[in-house]
Amino acid sequence: MITSNAAGEPDPVRGGAFYDAPQVLERYLRHRHSGTRSPNHVMEEPALFDELGPVSGLRVLDLGCGDAAIGRTLLASGCRGYLGIDGSAEMVRAATATLQGTPGRVERMDIEAFSAPPHTFDLIVSRLALHYVEDLDPVLAACRRALAPGGRLLVTVVHPVITSHETPRGAKEARTDWVVDDYFDTGPRRRDWMGDTVTWYHRTVEDYVTALTRARFAVTALRECAPRHDRLDGDPAEFARRRRVPLFLLLAGSIMGA
Ligand SMILES: C[S@@+](CC[C@H](N)C(=O)[O-])C[C@H]1O[C@@H](n2cnc3c(N)ncnc32)[C@H](O)[C@@H]1O
Image (cartoon, rainbow, N blue to C red; front, side):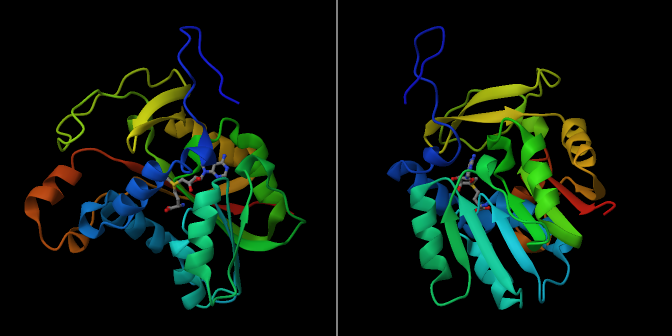
């Protein structure tokens, strides 16, 4: 259903359905897998791999799995099972292709609809998907329930200094300035992203930490994903540019109590 705001403009598409538009999907996957040009490769992934630890024997759930590239990596590293869920039919198609020939599985499902019996997973990862979710509390509670004793949650999101405010700019220019504004006005933001408009949910860093502790996770890591020089093929100008502003926030939690 297409809805509209008070000015009569159509609301941007939310969450998974956004990635079903062919031009968005193609552009996102090209950007995501562009090696040293991708901030995921230079900033988010190294911090994530630092925090991942050994995965051998683990049953892994991936919320908002996209094309499930990490699923192949985790299965190759010995995880016992991998289930990716994603709300986009096109991403599920891409993930199915990625996981072909492996025991990994993918299901089309909204993150908000996820639930699983207690002790189903040992590790839940979610990369750059939870800022599409309006209400984190039920999602984190479902994660908490689905994890086995000793289970862990590893999440990355677009950093709150980036979700707070959008600075209009020419599409082709590399960004040279960033504005942080309306930081404590949390809630939806219309965001021009991958050539279309989507809704992200802005939260403060404190909101993310509080949501995790409210769901009875002990926060074991908070990382701001500084760029890694070794992931940039020694390009000093790009390294300096990437050191200017945080793009990603990583949080890790382990379950507290029974
Ligand atoms: C930025 S992409 C990240 C994909 C993947 N985790 C990665 O790191 O490449 C965000 C993904 O989350 C999915 N997504 C966003 N909101 C969702 C929701 N509410 N339920 C299920 N999937 C959602 C999108 O379809 C998309 O595949």
